[in-house]
Amino acid sequence: MEPQAIRDRLSEEFGEAIPALDESGKDPCIPIEPSRIPEVCRFVRDTEGLEFDYLSSLTAVDTGDALGVVYHLYSIRHKHTLVLKVSVPREKPEVPTVEGVWPAANWMEREAWDLMGIIFEGHPDLRRLLLPEDWEGHPLRKDFKEKPDYKGIETTRPDMLQQFGQLDKLEAKEAEGKEAAEQSDD
Image (cartoon, rainbow, N blue to C red):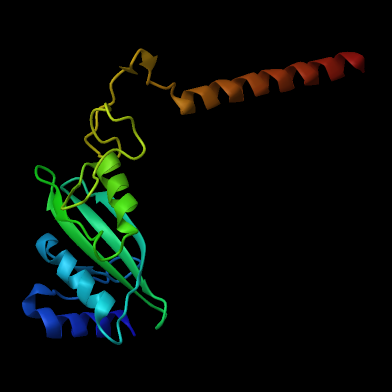
């Protein structure tokens, strides 16, 4: 089933809560109001002909103005895909969990919370997954300010472009030295 047909089927069920298909990106997607995401997900999972039984990925994004969650769904039976997106304000990034729809969402939502700070309401175990429990902030947010150290361990890193520039100069100097040595041998 094509994305537009899936969108039309959702529109039959949810009316104006389902906006037009967004085809501006690589994958056509359907924007969903955050509060509606669990019921839309249950519907696409349980409805004959749709049967999106596999949550391929759940990813958090930071657009600068807002935060969002992108759900990539797949129907093993019908071999079609669907992308749903929700957008939430930076100040209150809350989205209901879909862990009850697809248990695999558990760790994906934990990762999105850990790295981006999106709170999944109703999640049974929303805690850090990758970072230490006492880590402050969410490092994949565009507004994240890294502290100079964590428990006495320096977190700042050298400028890699500057280091590559120094390496280029060193290699050029070595090449000049070899060339000079070859000329003196002649």
